[in-house]
Image (cartoon, rainbow, N blue to C red):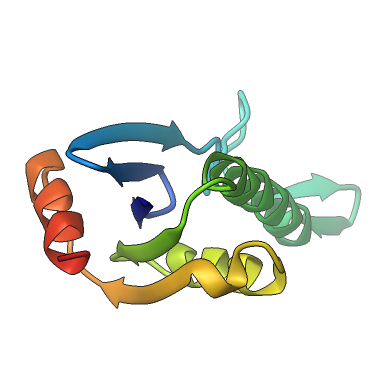
Length: 133
């Protein structure tokens, strides 16, 4: 039986797979940049004649697109597992939970979503092993 614990935040996801007596840890990095500055940019808005342009809407859309790509990479990684557990400090795990619940192949495999702090690699592995005992 293949069991997976995923610790994730906005920067990276640690996919910890337990299968029989072996374990595998894979890191999936996201491309999400919440603050992007362009050369010469000094303010949050640009000036165009007498108008001021606000780039927040475009930035928010870009962040949502990058987040969806990141979460879909994780979904591709866990398509052939038997049990899934999500944990981490950020809200990103809740977004992944929603994607898993609307996927008919994965929704029954989700066993739990836990809130946890930042951890070292060994702490994450121990957390997953302890959860699936």
